[in-house]
Image 1 (tube, rainbow, N blue to C red):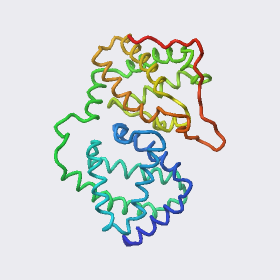
Image 2 (tube, helix red, strand yellow):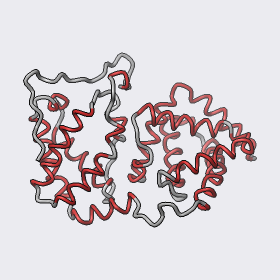
Image 3 (cartoon, one colour):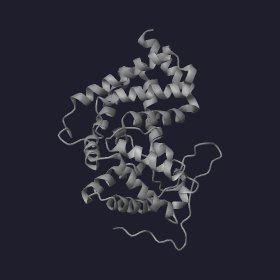
Image 4 (cartoon, rainbow, N blue to C red):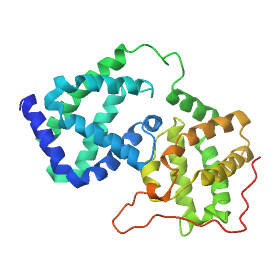
Length: 296
């Protein structure tokens, strides 16, 4: 099958995806962050933002038949990604995550011919962006990347058990809090501790055993405010220091944790995104006599 035929097949397939596009987006980011957790620092923001970025990517593929016309736009997109520390090597993860998401969403409809078409079109688009990234000035290349910082952090923390113990202390505080604890009613604490530990170990550059969704999708229906994040910070900082880690390590741990706040916090309840039709935003009401924990 020629490239022109592949272009037409991908365009038709995008039109067929239709209302399943958000499910495809969720699957894409889940696979992407599992393949390369450091990419959460590039693709951050809440569900509407991530979905908008994904929709933009699909629009590019849909218009790839006019590649000569959109090449300037692709080059501009690549230049914007330089500021986010995007690298040419990331496109392998993008491609793999996209194919896995398409297979999840389309199932038996994702035929070998369709997979070949998507791969061909993706490689053509990626080639333009990769060339820009490789030719870009070395802005930031002399700096330690986010992934390198995270790896160094996990090396200094040492054992996964240390991260687990911090989270055990942390969630003890969270569950016992009269306000934040309302989010955790009927939630298995041990499971949450295990998942959070797996996620953060991967974010710190350690072994990636996390198989859950990205933070933005897990919390998309939950109305979490900046005030709640600040309370959470107090408990996390307390747990880290009580485990015996240094102030310097504590600050670095919190910096990685803070990088996910933008994808979770919401300015209004209208920013909540429901998982299923008929679902309501998950909100909790602050007790009248509630007192926030004091920072150490």
